[in-house]
Length: 328
Ligand code: SF4
Ligand code: SF4
Image (cartoon, rainbow, N blue to C red; front, side, top):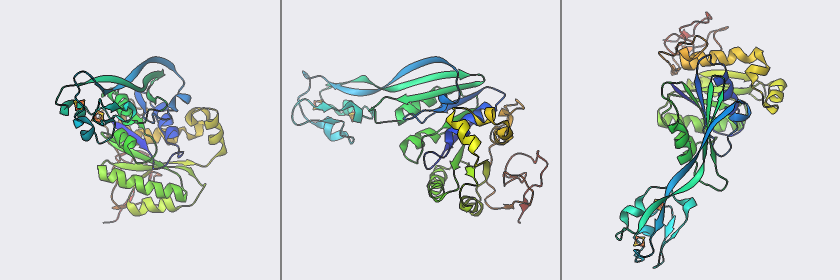
């Protein structure tokens, strides 16, 4: 089971949700920090470093002796990473996407590929959490190849949480592609609502099941909740606005460690998302939340997860609270 934690905008609390979710597992879990331009999960999961690897992409190198300056390579490259003005082409490695096309079209076989470093992937072990993080080199412009390198080190048999970069551009698509579920983190503000709408469109286009986590509940208005209700999107986690949480964050501490009263929120989320990847330790039969598409109505005093019918959230009413009312 792979759960990606994403958001339409930065600063909503993705890493807070990802790292705290990973911490409440009582079985082995992987946390992949795919925000390679600014990885910060390691600040909260302090552990022992295991290894660090350089990541390179293949870029062209031109053999001046063989090249006749025909310009085929420059005409082919849509990224303008190789240009020719009737002489040996110039290569701009930082703009190269490593597709290998220029070498294929070169009639003189004058291009060979050489490795160009874009960053590193490191592994850190913190109790049951294996943190795999990518760190893009300063000035390296392309995150997706490094994100793919991070994901390539994920072990399929162990549950994984992917901490995505903010936004809805290529690095996010590279992160959430292949995920079983996406948790979209937002905050109850007009900006939060606007960017949540963009993120929802993205995950719907990609046809990945998703739910929402609302951070700083109480700080803004209720328009995010109304939007989710209207759209039939389950709200799976609500973190209240609490100065103690902000103070804990600024000290580099996890909420579930420093403020144990909030631990059940994340345990419930882990149970819902991973089923057995939770304190029960049974990792078989994962069942992600599924939206009921508006079929159920939340009952008063019902489950805080909003959609708690047996057929929609997969928790089988194990908390004993009133399940949602079937409107049909
Ligand atoms: S490998 Fe692809 S992106 Fe890089 S220079 Fe060649 S054609 Fe352009
Ligand atoms: S396609 Fe090959 S021969 Fe032509 S300019 Fe490029 S490197 Fe030189």
